[in-house]
Amino acid sequence: MNYTPDQWLLFFFIYCFIGWIWESGFVSIRTKKLTNRGFMRGPFIPIYGCGCVLMMAVGAPLMDRPVLMYFAGMICASVMEFITGDMMLRLFKVRYWDYSDRFLNIKGHICLAASLLWGVFTLLMNYLGKPPIERQIMMIPQQTAHTIVIVLVIYFTADFSLSFKTALDLRDVIIAMEAFKEEIERMQKRMDVAIAFADDTRQQAKDALNDKIEESKEQARLHLEERLDELQKRMEYASLRLSEVDKGLEHKKEESVRLIQNRKQELLDQIEEYRLNTELMRRRFAESAKRRGALYRNMIRNNILVSDRFGESLEDIKRKVEEYTEHKGKD
Image 1 (cartoon, rainbow, N blue to C red):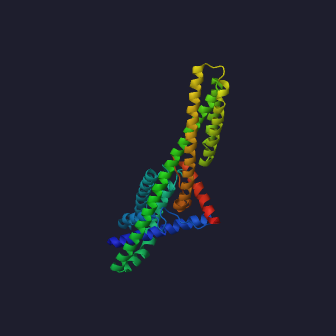
Image 2: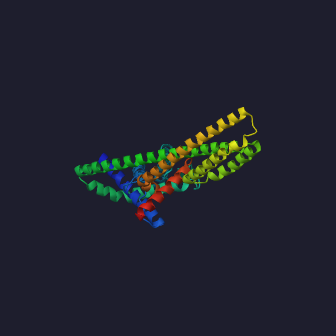
Image 3: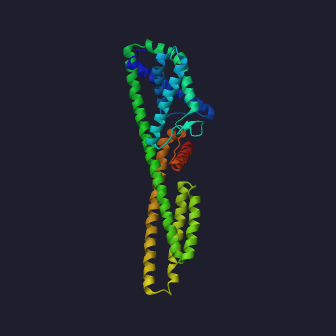
């Protein structure tokens, strides 16, 4: 198996392309619509190229020992899949495949069924798939092969770099949205305090806060825009309640009146600040949604994106991308 570096790269690109055909074809048939699968935009899925080249290297010395080849391919490819999945999750905060619901899975990155299939693919690739591809590659003149490889490397590098940057940008948006939602919850709690203060009695304040805790549980299931609408309503209600505080001050001492009025003004100022921040958040979310539709459409719509920690924010992004796609389709 004395291949030149150009020939190794040709094997890699061919298997990346075959993997893309397999994945895209399978998903397109299952979903009944054309689907461009994979991390990249072009017709390449790198994990298939890496896996098949690894199977070639592992299988070469075991051509007369198929059982050993099966287990060697299964183990090596599974290790590669686990490392790749774990690195992508750590780097992008998102899974591009998920075996969490499969039997005998490890952290959702690999599972027994997928590992067994890697062993089968190792045998099929080495005994049936590699020989015809190898013959075609060996027929290509060295200079021609070198030129083809240079063109493919340039294209592959550009595509991978763009996809990598898009995935990092998606990660940053997910993290920002999670912080965004935490800020909304903080504002909502502050509005609860303002409403409780305006209610003027401890028992009313306690009841109001208990009610808001139950509301917060329900709010956790709402989408981001719905949370913003609810926060807006809560701020308006808090402002109204605070505006009525003066009506109950006639019988209080002057010092108490001054303290209450100062507290009231402080809360009103905070509400106004939060109102401005909320409008700013809403505009940023709308602008980001439009931008996400253009940048992430292929990555989100054509892959099984799953996030352990940021799942809710990822679902919000998916929903906005679908809305953007539908809107563009109507235009």
